[in-house]
Amino acid sequence: MQDRCPMTNKIDLSKAPESYAPYSFNLSDKYKIMAQDELREDDDMRENALKQFREWIAKHPLIRKCRTDAPFLLRFLRTKKFSIPAATEMLEKYLTIRQVYPNWFFKLDINDPDLEAIIDSGYLFALPERDEHGRKIIFSNAGKFDTSRFTSAQLIKIHSMVLEALQDEEESQISGYIHVTDDSELNIGFLSIWSFTDIRNLAHCVQNSLPMRQKENHFVNLPSFANKLSEFILSVLSEKLRNRVFVHRGWDELKTKINPKLLPKEYGGTVPMAECIAQFKKQLKERRDIVLALDEMEIEINKSTIPWADSTDADIASGVIGSFRKLEVD
Image 1 (cartoon, rainbow, N blue to C red):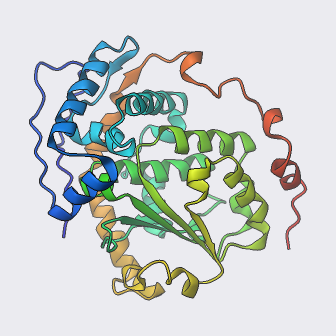
Image 2: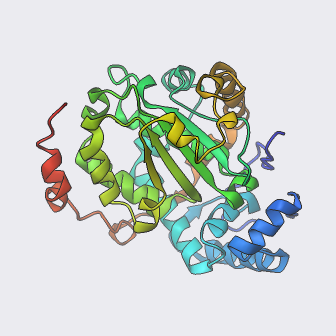
């Protein structure tokens, strides 16, 4: 079944439009019950929260342009379980990081030859079917990323483009996402393209600014040379996110957590990987204009809106980072 993505290609970026498009909850009872149980969401809560959120955006002195449609704002409200203060803070940070790191979050264009080539390689794509809990599964094969051709910035852009193309799907806003990464072909070049500053800043972005419910992250067959990096990444994540990271020694171990039929055929599922990629690429093409319109959103940024601006590599050059600098490849 095709996931619902109710946006049209016409995006209104006025922070205070004369009127707002009406919203109706059109998902199945499964998602309605899940939203009530996990997010405290019902019709009254949602309507009041959208009203307050829009009033806050309209009065915000630094926000100049922003989407105010329901599918966009519900990304933040559902991620923060309808806490208005938490959702507004996350939106502010989301708008800020997009402008602070334009090489990561701007021009997320599937028609860009390099980005399209990375998608075609099979490095990152969403699987066609959701799991039994309604969660979207995003699959990655780390060994498919050509580090001799592409940069860490392009890697982050691919992840940003994929997530932005998916985040208006209300099923995922409610049920969340699962990430599965095949690390069996991960090579040392993958690590060499990163700076510690990039890793730290990216960790800040992921856990403080991105409106998505990350339910599980599974890494399969992670090589021993990547252990120190994985320890560092875990060290800069919140405890909540750390508890959702699972490292598996093999696919049989993963398959105790995830129905193997949902994986690409090459990993025990039913749909060949090439078909999974082609289906997902079609979605990226269909949602291209929506994703690119995000570049027109605007917030005035200053030091107070970037809480990690004063930190330097020296702040993290201890502990795990210290040991990582002495990395030995087995």
